[in-house]
Length: 277
Image 1 (tube, rainbow, N blue to C red):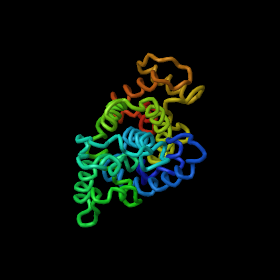
Image 2: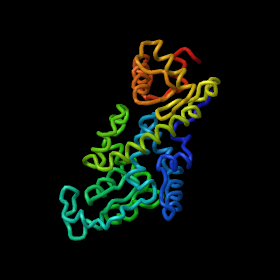
Image 3: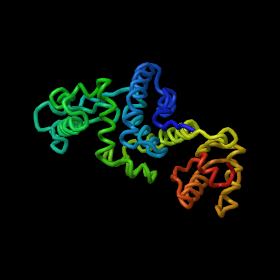
Image 4: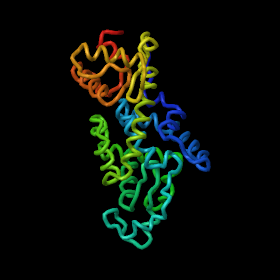
């Protein structure tokens, strides 16, 4: 049976769900930006192997935080705070404002715009503008998704995403723990959205009987059944129908033991390993 990649299964609603609620005066911009990413990101995500549940969830949740829930592809601040930041390559007067954060992951600083140009010209030889000379072009529809892929790829962020390490991903992107609470909230929503897409990306005759389950579900009979199966295999968790941190950890441990992707999501492959598919 043919399958659809997780990235290709993304919908506009997926992006909006991950971003969460926004003020009414930003909702139109949010939908426009999310629609641009929905069209431009999937092929690039597949190409650069942002193709597993945790990778997709971490990638999209970080983009959602950095872009104010997809409301903007340009930093709201003027960029003056970056003036004189030689660590960002801002060595000329006005560089702070000129090379302010742009793109869904906020490409910032002259040096990063120059590096993005160099990297892009290796990906698409002979077909890329000079973003250092024209930094505003980063926000054009053709390049905006590439700017996010570029940063994720050169920083090798698939690796901490595979470990479900939101702190390391955040530190690499932002240099510390800035906005960590919001990033975690968006990651939880992203995991929920990805879990729903898993059944689409991995079609199976059992997917209706055993739906994808994920952290955050409560008072759920399917979660209760999952917990019972995990307990029967040695997990020390409560059987209460609530998919919390303990259930997620137990599920990851089971997945690891059976050489499955450690997503913490009960997908068709996990049900099969549990003997229920």
